[in-house]
Length: 90
Image (cartoon, rainbow, N blue to C red; front, side, top):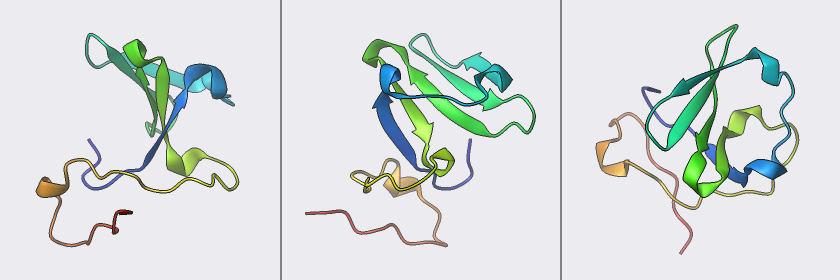
């Protein structure tokens, strides 16, 4: 889907405010989740994890500081050889 790494922030749906939500195009990617893309450029915006009641928001879309840190790398064993993963907190 991305071709390399991508960072997401998980948040309860009620805690997320979207600007331009009318530009989103939704795709039902599985029985339990759907994904939103920008209808203009096709960029991935978020994933709705319906049973969990949270959205995974593409971190690059967040304005301002987040005070968040990486807590987990998914799919690390299948990463390309052209970059190193950040060290995880102990």
